[in-house]
Amino acid sequence: MARLLAAACLIHLVTAQQIGKIPEIHPKLQTWKCSTLTGCVPHDTSIVIDALSHPLHEVGNSSVSCGNWDTGLNPTLCATEESCAENCVLEGTDYASHGVQTRGDSLVMHQYLTVNGTTSVVTPRVYLLDESGKNYDMLRMLNQEISFDVDVSSLVCGMNGALYLAEMEESGGRGALNPAGAQYGTGYCDAQCSVDPWINGVANVDGAGACCNEMDLWEANALSTALTPHACNISGVYSCEGDSCGSDGVCDKSGCGFNPYALGDHDYYGYKEVVDTSKRFTVVTQFVTDDQTASGSLTEIRRLYVQNNKVIQNAVVNVTGTEVDSLTNEYCESASYFEEMGGLKQIGKALGRGMVLIFAIWNDSGAYMNWLDSEGSGPCNSTEGNPALIEAEHPGTSVTFANIRWGDIGSTYSHGQ
Ligand SMILES: *[C@@H]1O[C@H](CO)[C@@H](O)[C@H](O)[C@H]1NC(C)=O
Ligand SMILES: *[C@@H]1O[C@H](CO)[C@@H](O)[C@H](O)[C@H]1NC(C)=O
Ligand SMILES: *[C@@H]1O[C@H](CO)[C@@H](O)[C@H](O)[C@H]1NC(C)=O
Ligand SMILES: *[C@@H]1O[C@H](CO)[C@@H](O)[C@H](O)[C@H]1NC(C)=O
Ligand SMILES: *[C@@H]1O[C@H](CO)[C@@H](O)[C@H](O)[C@H]1NC(C)=O
Ligand SMILES: CC(=O)N[C@H]1CO[C@H](CO)[C@@H](O)[C@@H]1O
Image (cartoon, rainbow, N blue to C red; front, side, top):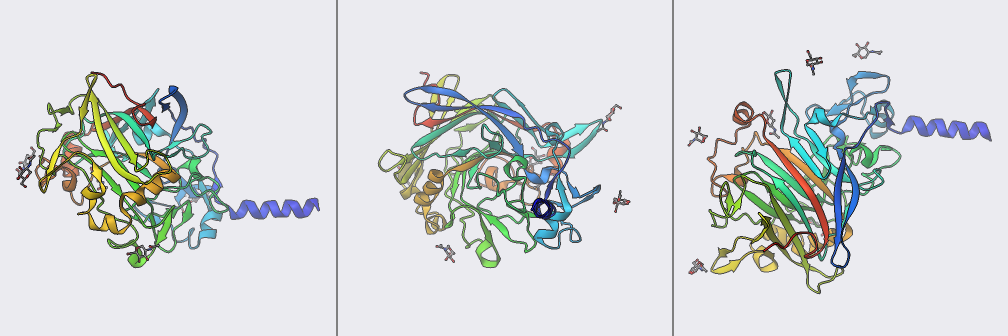
């Protein structure tokens, strides 16, 4: 009997992707949970960087990679999901070497890292873990609000410092072929259904995309900002193939966005504007339901800012003759694919089930981030977002997120004057 058990354990060991010897130490990031009755209490959370920023190599030979974003999967080691899990080891990583630092309640992320005179591209993307450090923290945001401080002052044209929610699995897809799970940053998905070498920590041998509902609280640089829900007509992580990954697939890739500049207010957000991006400010996003309870249907997404202890109402823009300062069903009517995928009600269901908080900084060598800050969406010209220019002229570009709080509407920020 004992021998049989031992054999069973061995089989289990060799069929599961292995966790290596280099320890994974998650940087702590203090957050707060708030309520109208009790105020804000500390929440002892930490962050984990995406699995693909961890070394992933052949068992017994750290110089043979099992694949990464640039190369895709190693075809020899990862011909099948099972062989990839047997042949590969996932190791812990050093966060500073990916341009990520935390201190207290503050997180700084850099796009480039210069060590001994050599600049490399790091582009970190990190996820919020719960107090156990084993799973993602699931934020349930219906009839709730989330606020955070942000410093975008060094995010030049073409850069994007992002804070968003995606309906990833709480465990990061931990399972027989993925024992690492959320502790090693597996399980990313978003409404773009991007094709990565792994889906939920399992080798993506079919080249599928990982789709899920996505709520972009914040995509911004110092010149432009956008608030954008992207609905998908699925729940959880969906592996799309063929047409279901496309622009009229299971997710609305464009979203129903609110960018004050694009909507006509050119003096609201920017250096020395109403929201002055040369200094730190607080961003508040509220998810309002039809019955003012967490079991209701999402009907409105509201935004306000706090800077210098003053509450700044969102920009009021004129959409075909109507004054608008929030996302409503009426406002989103013109985002036809968002509506087709279920609109606010659908993203509201995902917010009710729980979503993972994601922090990212990135650039865009294909389109120079023009959709965010140029060509009618912002004051940047269409070529200055070229990453080669940014790397040469602003290699220190970074974003800081801090003081992250969520809870009852009105409970997370200082109402000031
Ligand atoms: C590891 O792989 C490299 C590249 O294939 C090879 O040159 C080296 O001999 C291998 N080392 C071991 C210990 O197998
Ligand atoms: C940078 O230079 C120092 C001093 O010469 C050296 O100890 C260190 O290993 C170098 N770091 C890298 C990443 O090359
Ligand atoms: C989701 O939308 C796609 C594209 O319109 C459609 O093919 C699919 O049947 C829809 N699925 C559900 C569950 O509604
Ligand atoms: C909104 O724009 C329309 C024209 O599209 C104009 O007639 C109306 O006066 C504007 N309203 C406000 C409040 O600016
Ligand atoms: C765009 O802006 C950059 C930086 O300010 C400037 O060097 C470049 O000449 C501008 N290009 C155009 C076409 O205006
Ligand atoms: C996603 C993306 O386009 N990243 C680019 C950021 O900029 C560097 C150059 O500075 C490019 O190598 C990356 O491809």
